[in-house]
Amino acid sequence: MEYINYILIGLFVYFIMTRLLPAKGVRQITTTELKSELNDKTKQFVDVRTPGEFKGNHIKGFKNLPLHFLAKTAEKELSREREVVVLCQSGMRSLKASKMLKKLGYQVTNVKGGMGTWRN
Image 1 (cartoon, rainbow, N blue to C red):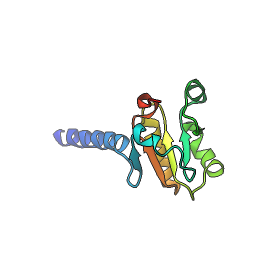
Image 2: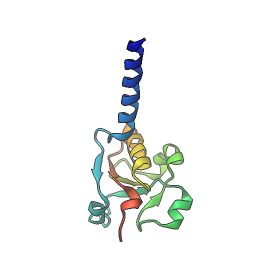
Image 3: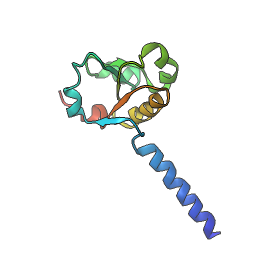
């Protein structure tokens, strides 16, 4: 019985780690670092928050592609030839989006802390 408890704890830890750790091959930047990249026309800037969140406050130059539609819209909205910089409110949805885009073959950068740490 004790053996089963160790297995369950191990699975729980694995689940948490895979959700919180950055995806392999995904660059991580802060919102401060993002400011110096905003004028780079070779990059695509994507905000994965809901349309309501985006309408309430967003960074100029970002395109709103909500996370729940991203898998369906990425092909026609994004180029695999250009780096994709992904942002959300806190960094959790953008991390999930970054992992998804990486698996689809995109070069991805995740903005840690998201809009919650953005200062104009």
